[in-house]
Image (cartoon, rainbow over all chains, first blue to last red; front, top):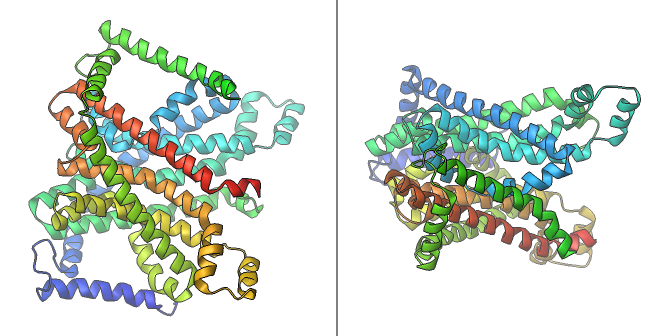
Amino acid sequence: MRRPTSGFWLVLALFLLWEVSARTGMVDSPNWPPFSQVLAALARDTLSGEIPLLVGSTLARMFAGLAAGTVVGVAVGLLFGASRLATRVLGPTVELVRPIPIPAIIPPLVLFLGLDNGMKITIAAVTAFFPVLTNTAQGLRAVEADQLAMARTFGVPAWRRLFLVTLPAILPYVMAGLRVALALALVTTVVAEMIAGEQGVGHYLVLMQFAGRAEEMYAAVLVLALLGYALNRGFLWLERRLIGWFFATGRDG
Amino acid sequence: MRIERLTALLPGLGFLALLLAGLEWAVNAGLVRRALMPPPTAIWEVLSDLIASGEVLGPLFATLRLVFIGFAIGSAVGIALGTAMGWWGAAYRLLEPLVEMLRPIPKAALVPPLMLFLGLGDTMKITSVSLAVTFPVLVNTLQGVRGVDRVLLDSARTHGWGTARVLRHVVLPAALPFILAGMKTSLGLALIITVLSEMLTGQGGLGFLILDMQRSFLIRQMYAWLVILALVGLALNAVFAWAEGRALHWQRRG
């Protein structure tokens, strides 16, 4: 175990200050429950199964969207890499759509897809699409021409070259894009839940704010913080397992 | 050179025109429900009215103001803390656990609690945006400051430079590419959080209007404001890319 640093004591002191300021009435507000009550609310709603259910539904939508956005992002990236014409024709449209802040496309999407899963999965997919596309294109530029030429010399057919040479070579880049996409998709999925419909952790958070149940509201913020942390950690682990060779050869993105 | 760049854009613009024309045709042919997707020309009419009457300015400036102030505060805090943490080990040990604890919180989740404390006005919105901006800038600054070439630092010390001078003239310029990369990420986040906080509070500029128009079934207006917001995003990115290019011109030459 590491020796606790000054930073550890600072965090502890801040939590203590939260607890004390709420209990002694230094901050006398119904919006400022003691930290212990937030933890109690978190434990209560976790044991009752409510929070696990909400987290599960949020994650399911987020991952469905991520998967769809990644597949489309890699496909379009490969198309751009294969054909200059495609880049010229489709590129400007992609660049025009990219800077639209995701929350702004929720209202029109609601018109077409309603308030439920379809809309939210699409939001997560759109979020994932752009960073994956950018990184796929970047990865394709880095694929060694020698490798492809050699595969061609040995008469490996085009579709097998795609799976045996190109896709493994761009995997590290796609993963880097996916890591950006993962953090963003959690944000946009929660945002979509906040703005429309009655699903997931995002909706729960806003509902508790309106209901004036501050403990539950902060518990939801804690849950999202833990999710953000766990997702990033999980992803780093997956990245090491999948593309450890990439870092081992001393190259980086 | 310029002509070549313009002709390179032609196929893309042609495709975009074709897309809009196709949409216009599909709506008029009844393939897309007019209530959900008005023809682009109808949206254009609303859009040109909004611009010609000057009605666009109020909401546009309201949103831009939030983005700019929040971006400026968040960047300043991020650069200051990141530099301190990268330079002084004591500051790093003190703040690192706190930063690592706050960083993974999706900042959108902080908007509802902040609404309870700071109300629905600009203070809340600017605080939310600043918080979202701070962390990517902080982390990148930290990385940049730590990566400064030791030889540069040693030679500055050899010349008897004080800490302030070294930070100002050696460390910050060397870390600038990292800082700007963090700020670029943050700019997108700033716009997202601005729009979200306008939507959740039901007050303010472009984000509020887009949601409000949808809920009032003023669909053409909704699309018109969305186009304006898209242009804002595009313009902000372009301005940032231009500024980044100017700030880092020495890097490519060197």
